[in-house]
Structure formats: structure tokens, C-alpha cells
Picture 1 (tube, rainbow, N blue to C red):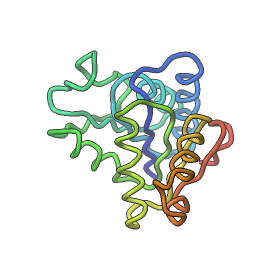
Picture 2: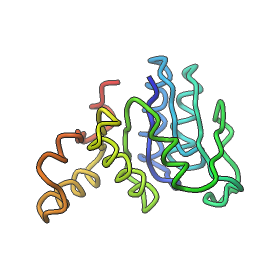
Picture 3: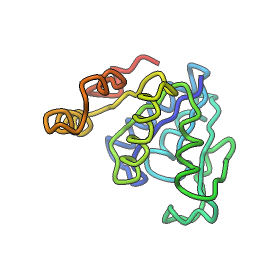
Length: 165
């Protein structure tokens, strides 16, 4: 199974630890981890997956101009380079499951693309992890941004420890 993990390019402390632990669990279960290939939760999850013997696919953008380091992280088993952000997101969504950790505008872009893909029937489900994403889902629902049936494609978990992979 290919599991795409979305999250912040800037992560430390508990966020980085969560991403590392999730990557480790994905690798130990012999699943493939796919992510954006750069820093933050991407590097932390990739490191955990590789240390558990797993395979990591990082998906970057030509010239690596979206990351402050200008290069993919060293924990990727392979790197797929796309011409732009839209192609990058499309590649990341070629997967069996999407897990979303807290992030910024790039993570929101990826989340909403995944959500539309799930609504269209291309993805089986999306897992949102943490209180920030739970609050986002509540806000979108309470303020009429989502139809009731749209929430059927999303599961919310308080922590990485609750996920069954």
C-alpha cells in the first residue's frame, strides 16, 4: 500500500516526533511512504520509515524552489520531480491512503486536492490528525463550506497513536 503523508515543511518538537513515529510505523508495516520530499514532517517521516526498513518516495518540484534548502531530504529512497505544484500534488495523490498532519498553506492546498479526489471516487479515504485539523473540519462544516456527504470521506484522529495502518 502507498500511503501519502501531508504536513508542514517546518516541523520540530512534537510535530516532528509524530511524523517520525508515523513514518516508522508505515515502514515497519512494509507500506510505501510518499510525501513532498523536503524538510519538516516530510524529512521526519521519511527518516522513520527508512530506519524501519521502508521505502520512501519524495515528490519534488523542478529546481526544488519550494523548499528553503533547495534540495530533497536525504532519507528519500527515490525522488520524483514534477514541473510545478499542481503536477506534484497529482503525483502525491497517486496512492491508497492520505494522512494529513498540521501544516501551512501548501498542506491545505494538498488536503483540499485530496478531498476533491476522494469525493470524485479516486481516493478511498483521508485521515486528519490533531486538534488543528479537527477544528478546521468543524469550522468548514459549521459555516456551510461542506455538504454533509463531503465529510464521509474524512476521518479525524486526535493523535498519531490512534491511527491503524
